[in-house]
Image 1 (cartoon, rainbow, N blue to C red):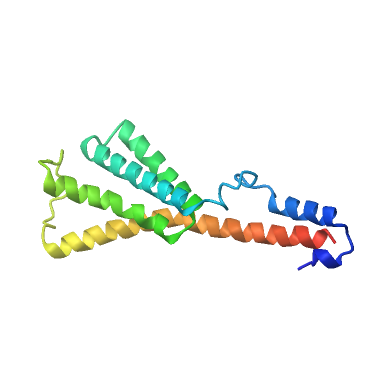
Image 2: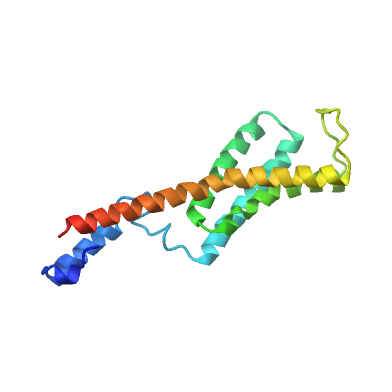
Length: 169
């Protein structure tokens, strides 16, 4: 990496180079929204994601078509974006919410499924734990796409920053 102090340029030029490297093109780079989020803002984004996933799951259970099908797709994509922005492992916790809402509605309300989809008897405790765990893992894997995209994005940004610093010499 290039040491700017030894390059012989003035401090003003060094600051301008550092500023241009810091403000390289990013969707949120100039505002510092991604890099400088507080933990409270990250928690608020995660909580909002969880609430949106829970609301869509609840609505989809009663009305599977129409607006709820489209909004489910949109909310899940926004949840991936939320995980991308938060960039912490605990941003995957909203993956628990759809399964918890499903368990709540089926077991603690007078919910009756509109149509019996499967004729399998999966009512035992083993199947309950297995299917719930599988649903949570699938949801977490879907949300982990946001973490993977952020890792790739940060890696690309680091390479670009190194290239900009080395070309400033």
